[in-house]
Image (cartoon, rainbow, N blue to C red; front, side, top):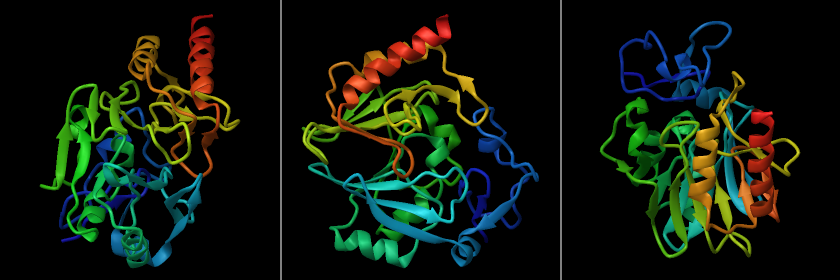
Length: 268
């Protein structure tokens, strides 16, 4: 049976003979149903219309769809001391992308920040040899295609190695997570926050939203909780959710300034 993919959020669903009646991910107020109503595609149909862009983004291999599809995020390959991590996922898997990843040592685990980027995570895991997928347990109800490859972590921190830590930021989703990579990819380390902190277009600040497409600000209490959970983590760079949306150099100061700026704006 087909594995349908929502054309608005890019989430792949479990096998069904017919398209699902609804996409709960899009019906949630943090997302939206497409202006033409709920529409679906399949992985095979997606591959006939789209390609994958495999390019450097800030010194890391990035993977994204061409032309843009759904949200559109890009994934990154992080070659860490905790293994090769595929951070985030996209809706399409290709033989070329799998071969490129294997040429760089393969992928040891897939880690995703929050439900909007789950996309075709199980498809990716299977194509890469059944590697584990790490998600925060607070968001387990949003999994649309269950798999034994999915592993849920809990708490506010999950240390993968001496240099790599998963941090539950919360706010955007209860389980919204970031990766802190102390040793890379450049000197000073980096933070990969998904949408918990979104790098804005000036690439000098981040912002905090409960719903980005519907312009619903994040509660100040959640923003202050994120600030508290990131205390003690140093980083020179922040890698945003899509191509080029990165703060390269001085990112710790930029994030601290962004916390102050946001909290002042919403309390004025």
